[in-house]
Length: 157
Image 1 (tube, rainbow, N blue to C red):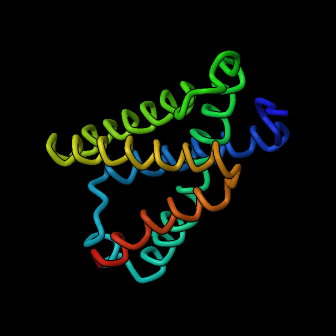
Image 2 (image 1 turned 90 degrees about the vertical axis):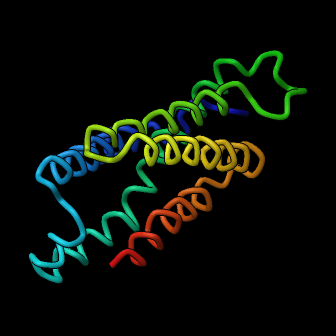
């Protein structure tokens, strides 16, 4: 049986972690944080940023969008959707995930780059959401998200 929040006890801690991650990213962007400034500040900060981006961001974003929003919306709208290929909650969560990347405009990213990132995040969120609906494998989606965040970051060093 589909439940809205299978791990409701963990929801508070993951939500707090997600808020902390967003706050750190915003503060880093407002202070002109770039890889160049991190490199000049020391290797420890670079490693911390890589771990942060490569482990925590993907898991918390996936928990928020796939594990919480998508699951809750699909639970709420489950009636009458048995024949649909893509559930409404999955589509809405992917759209919110993509639109959430528009916040990068405020961090100095160009409009074109932000639009591309938003579209890419929407498509990736939709693919991850469908996989999560079919396989119910949250960990695979979260690890894939981590890899997709980590590798370009590592290559940009």
